[in-house]
Image (cartoon, rainbow, N blue to C red; front, side, top):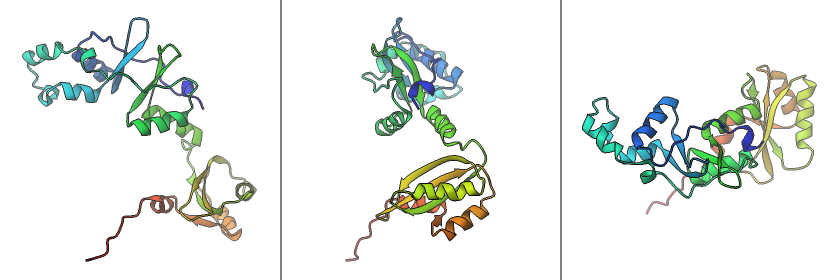
Length: 230
């Protein structure tokens, strides 16, 4: 799925010469944390975030007892003075996987989407990605997630699908992940039913090991190093 299908297209933007109080008001009004800074022709030149505002304004400014003098002082700070520049951006033809990996790598909460001339087309946030993956995985519909341990060889997924479909159970999605044990994979079918007793029995009878999804997750966590006592 492409970024263009999941990004927010009606983006709240701000001019570089606006003061940071205006940026704060926009964030509060639209309940957002990232505001792209654009030129009149739509050219993206920066981004201002709620973190930038908190760094530029004293902590007391965010309390209810703000004084007029503080507002006057804050209004002298322009968006261009504190905005982030040299932004990491996405193309509308990038995939959701691209966006997810880039957000994880850059540790930001949202990325702007631009055309070949760096004009703003949209913005995609962690919230947008979560919504998109909920739709892709089908987990917005009530169901059950299974974790099946399989050998890493051809035909395993087909066998699992055949066993489950014989019970006339529909799939929301199927994911395959690495397992800590060499030569093994973990298969995660999300089934659109809460009655999986017979499915589990048949899978076990076919020789498959079933784990609780959280049990698999805990196995993937880095193990704490133990030091020999001296």
